[in-house]
Every structure is written in C-alpha cells, then in structure tokens.
Length: 202
Picture 1 (spheres, rainbow, N blue to C red):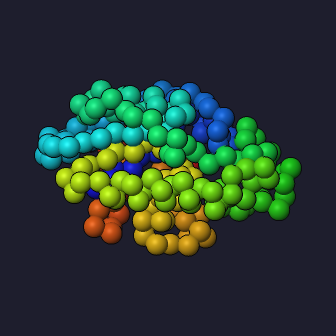
Picture 2 (cartoon, one colour; picture 1 turned 90 degrees about the horizontal axis):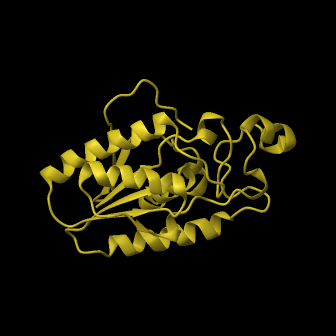
C-alpha cells in the first residue's frame, strides 16, 4: 500500500514559477499543509499499526514536508530516494508560467509540460525511474505501508503508471497539495485533510 504526497506549497508555487530541480522553501501555508497531512496519517497509523516506511525526494521542499509529517504522525525518519526527485524542466526552471508562455508560445495554455521542456528530462527517463520505484515498492511485503513525499510531475506519473494510463492522460491529472492519495488493490483513493484557509492547486 502506498500513501502518495506532494510537498506543501513553496514560494515558487505561490509565484506560479516552474520549479523542477530548482529548490524553493515552504511557505507558512506549505508547512500548515504538511502538518495537516501528518495529522491525517497519524490517525491512519493508529488504526493500522505495523510496518510503515517513509521515503522522500532529495529536494529540500520535499524533505521538509516529510520531516514535519514524520514528527506528527510518529513515522520513521524519512529515507531519501533519488527516484522521487522532481522532473527536470531544463530551460523552463525559474520562469513564471506567464513568462514561459511568452518566451515559448508553442507551450501557451498547454497542461502538463513535464517531458516536453527544452533541455529537460524526457518522459521516457521519468517513467523509467518512477516505474522502477513503483515496482520495488509493490514487491515489498504485503503488510508494508509506504509513504512517499514527492512532486507534481512525479506524483502524476506514478499515479498514471499505477492505473496503466498513457502520458497524455497523466498530464491531465490534478496535482493538489495538502491531500493524500492511497494506492491499493489497483485503485487510487483521495484522502482529504483538515481544511485550511486556502489550498492552491499548482
């Protein structure tokens, strides 16, 4: 069973900037989202005690989110797995979406630009590493529950691979912050957390 989490809101998210491998700190709201997810997982852990693992992307925004969640939910110290790192967006990184659309008009209004960025990571490379992580976790003992803290592009790809979707369907998936996706028995369930004043969907 996998509990899939996108990191909390960052400064770049708030500014609508492409992050990729460029890091950006959590905002106050981002830390609140991480706390809310930790509280939701704490309740689940109490209901389902046993073999829990917590893995995170090596980027700071994911590691901070994972650390907050671990402390609140009583989970083990997060283990870093490079396969969970965000997609490399190459030349797009650091630009706002408006700046990107102006500089590269062929991408204006295009949803799900991962795998398309000049100088960025290809979808083939992304799906290979994410698929390798997914296969490894699915091969874990049946009682193992794995919490993964990652990023928008990786989370959509992971959910898509789990459901057997094509890349265009993955690009149309939502990418919320402050919610948890539970992957189990071939199904994906969205678990809401305590409501906050504003939860952006970037």
